[in-house]
Amino acid sequence: MTALVAWADVEVGTELPAQTFAITRADLVRYAGASGDFNVIHWNERVATEVGLPNVIAHGMLTMALAGRVVTDWIGDPGALLEYGVRFTRPVVVPDDDSGATLEVAAKVSAKNDDGTVQVTLTASFDGATVLGKAQARVRLA
Amino acid sequence: MALNPDFIGRSYAPEGTYVVGREKIREFATAIGDTNPASHDVEAARALGYTDLAAPPTFSVILSLKASGAVVRDPELGLDYSRVVHGEQRFEFTRPIVAGDELVVTTTIEAIRTMAGNDMITTRGDIATVGGEPVATTRALLVSRGPEDDS
Image 1 (cartoon, each protein chain N blue to C red):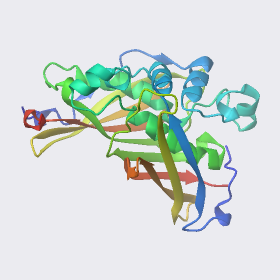
Image 2 (cartoon, helix red, strand yellow):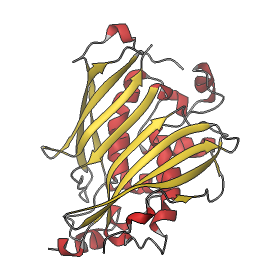
Image 3 (cartoon, rainbow over the protein chains, first blue to last red):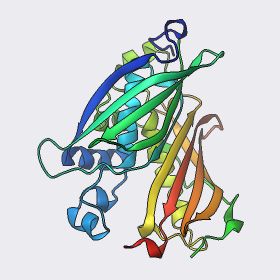
Image 4 (cartoon, each protein chain N blue to C red):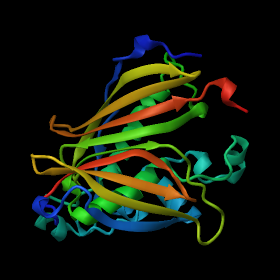
């Protein structure tokens, strides 16, 4: 269980490679099956609009998982992620077309701890607005 | 209807055992586009020191979702699930979930408060092996929108 990144090689402000994710309706169906979250607002436009949403929205947990990949792709070892938390502040609306919604995720080291871990702060945005608040991870580096 | 704060501390025993399968880990990793070999290739996972495929971190939500169902469906608590939105999610990992794990989740209501007519309930899921080894702790903040929010 060893991260690909060494603690000594990063400093506060070090940026992780940013990533852009396309989320289509097909991705929502696949995630519903994989996670067991079949809430209709994630696949049924009629119900989503009836409850006041602009359209079908992505599972918050899918957005969290995609944002988390920016961290786990950086460290290489899923076991090096010790803590991860987010607030869901805005929905990601997924249109019924081939390109879907575009989620942009950036992350940087926001603190170095003496125990060989670092704090990472993530920013996830869709349609020009952030969709995750207080998005933080703590990872153990090599 | 405000939720009864007396439910803070109420705990729900595990509803059976979840056996983690290799194909479920691969399916979940694929659904989030996670190509990390540790979640797909057994040899790659073993090279990292795991006994079998290691799940992506948020795989834990499969277990916590099942477990929080006990809270959501508790007739005495009376949460109206049609009004519930997921406000916040946190994970603390002791180790990754690996294929072959037999896991149980104990769910506890950690906090209940009412803000601006909305009920806010924090549930904690303690995920452990059937042998009692802790694996992860999940916390979800569920917000039940008050009726006056329907504009």
